[in-house]
Image 1 (cartoon, rainbow, N blue to C red):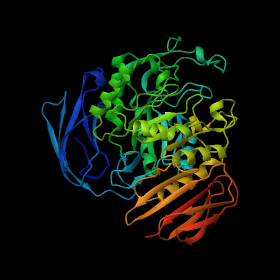
Image 2 (cartoon, one colour; image 1 turned 135 degrees about the vertical axis):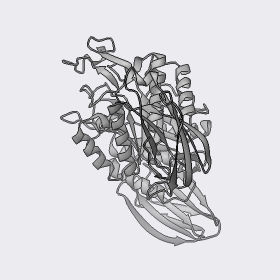
Image 3 (cartoon, rainbow, N blue to C red; image 1 turned 30 degrees about the vertical axis):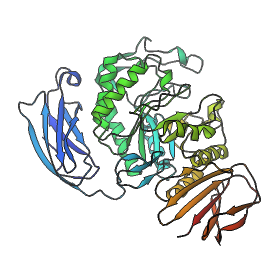
Image 4 (cartoon, helix red, strand yellow; image 1 turned 180 degrees about the vertical axis):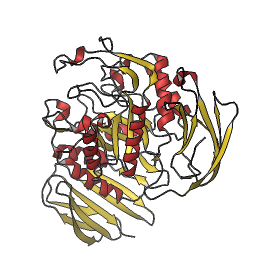
Length: 502
């Protein structure tokens, strides 16, 4: 038995054992651990088979101090035991993200987390060169969350084979596939042979490496566990095969602090799956994820019932004829959970309505959603000679919005603890009260272009700044009494930040 005698708080303790490789260890063998330490007693964690006769159990300790554990397995004649020390969290390690203040998020150590996310569906299944480009772009600090899939994707601009597959087997021959016939390829096509009871551990190992690379950059890995864009048959597996997959994914990934569970991308397009199936998957995750990471499910046309107790936050795509900006605070009031509009259209120039908004419109939607007390997700779909679109493949960013979203993220991170609370008054106004009778009043003007604004507050002193959200400038207007007028440049996309001084 191999394991580390020292692990940092919210790090990963991995216990490794040798066992049988014959037969099918994925279905014929089992391994689990029980951990005890300060604040965590008898935490049961299921392990997994990692190929070549190697079995692993992973555990994320939430407290500092001395831990002990015992390992049981179908192939062990007796229980094995061990102990380790959990040291303080290292720099940049704030723990997993949790729901905070009903509508917002914070890391487990209490540090506020304001998601400014992006989508790159299968960036980790591209060439090594493209993956490196993606990580280099992410290192620029535009985003602190990224949505991506465990399974490969088959859809427009996504006809090539991925760098790896999740199962042992061979894919369908896609020679001659093009825009006109890609829908005709399905799991029944000749040449598509998979063993849905035998995973390819190398595929999952690589995803873990990517999760850790994102962790180094301070980015949450929002894992999409299922999706309908499939020519390999992964979206059409039988219930027992689905359950085996869900257990394997949770047992492998749940010890990483920066994981979120996105149960599906467009759950309502997975025609083989019923609501009862999704509820069963939820039971698997809730019972087996000892960290209890954030959980949600993404829609196409029909919203899932986000009032379900297993859902921690709403992951919403815009719906036909429904603008997510205007609906944000209504969904917030209805579900009383954090609202994340993870797909509000993409900045780009392809010939799909969902993939051709401007950088200005992307930035405006981010600000409007944020001011209504929610959070938004970025995507980019610019035509590329090799069909490398950020939205699915990663690579390089070409749009104008990422820098502006990084600017917004900085402004959010300067807010006092507790997140914005929708005030719903003239134009777009949001406020956050702080201890000591101080507060921040943030007002976004969007496409409105007033040349001045008048304010009247309670007695006190008020520090006023005018923010140009597009040009990314902040003008200090000075300190004023309770009644004052602020001159504005009369341009679109301006904001005003007023801080009541203690």
